Image (cartoon, rainbow, N blue to C red; front, side, top):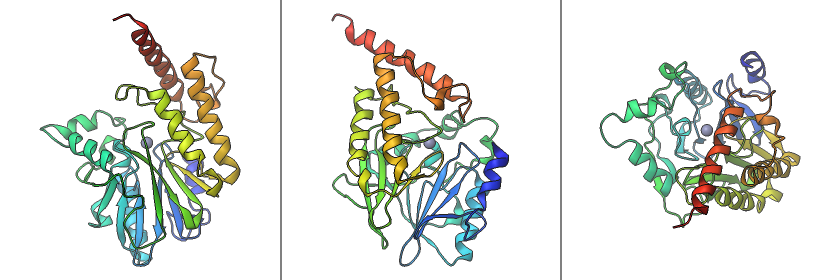
Length: 291
Ligand SMILES: [Zn+2]
């Protein structure tokens, strides 16, 4: 997998690490789980969404942007999971945003002694040393009534929902027809539900898919948090695939989803599916129990 990712990394590049996916919208794909960082050109610099995972990758991205004469003027984290909350000093000190709920959760993550050790516990040990935690999660929450990211560039609509993580935002760059989906609509990841933190993780997920479906007609390019970029034809296909997965999980139906099958892109996905099946089954037993 690693070789093929590297081979594709320079395709259509304006720079060694960035690839244009729509006018003024570029991505950098990380070696870690096909994570996609998104760069959006504005009038005085760029908006950087989910900057990346490895310190060296973020440094290379910072270098590229410097060479292009494009300072980072704003950042955004789609949701409060470690791989979407990172930052690198080379990217500068622009304001970094997330939904208010995302920022609240990040603040709790960073509070108290030993937070770095707690977060390090979630990072795969083989890459832990390459992930800089010092600027993790330093984001400002945007009030729920703020429908767009405050910055000087193409309008970016915030579509907040509770699938996968509380305070998760999909972003619609309306003038460019680009949907930045966060950790949904991936061809590599099955829907990963926020099983422990919410009252109804299945319904939260289905509600988020309905919200995204509502803007699907405006999307020409789909950028998932992890996985391949999709064209217009992929938007509804991936919504349907995610919904079918969540229905199968809810109804304990036999699953035929290649993302969690024997030829899954990520070899740990079948294990995630097994764990979710058990967690959902346990929840429904608990909900059915009298008293
Ligand atoms: Zn992620």
